[in-house]
View 1: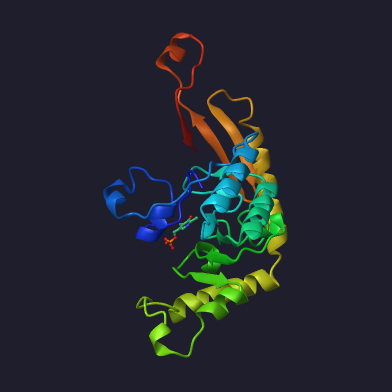
View 2 (view 1 turned 135 degrees about the horizontal axis):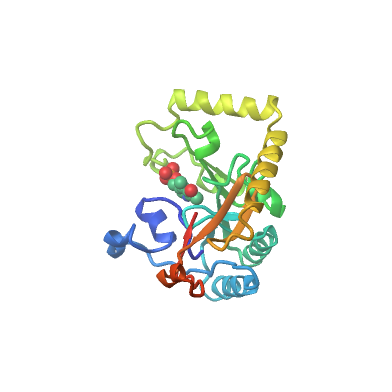
Length: 246
Ligand SMILES: *Cc1c(COP(=O)(O)O)cnc(C)c1O
């Protein structure tokens, strides 16, 4: 999806937005199809494009950051779009990969963002919040069908490409502690309290001409800083000539 970020390996850079951060690797990146970001009022364009790509090109998979594109500028889209993307994916046999590295563990208001769209992705990536964000650990979840398709007793079929610290015991202990917090502590109430506080904070910017597009999903609140022309300072009309994620 346009503006997406999925990481810094060759594969993840290939499926993420191209730009200054990965320009040096451009010759090595795989070609992928991109669907537009479902901006407000233009959601149907995204769905139509995905429908066309999955029908004509037999796409292997669609990878998306569900509900919120983090590095792309905290861009938000409604859960209904995600529900529709999953419906189209299912109809065409395209796998849906939910990159919940940033959105997982309560950030969007639910444990995983996909819950709000009432969908189960075929593959779900979780990391950052898995340990409460304090130590690196990632997990890739897959449906039973995908797991079984890769499972083999044949050593030649082993996934040999892991890394030295895979399943690092200290990281796993931190993740287990985080899971206990989710199980035993009033996490939902804390998320609700944070969301309410942030919503109140955001309201204060609503009529401020220096900020635009204040928005929130769960505990993620964002607004864009308007860059105003110099002429603004001499009393002319404010004419924003660029936007940056705030
Ligand atoms: C941070 C981030 C990643 C990268 O995760 P790494 O574990 O650093 O590879 C991938 N996807 C999203 C959505 C992220 O926010």
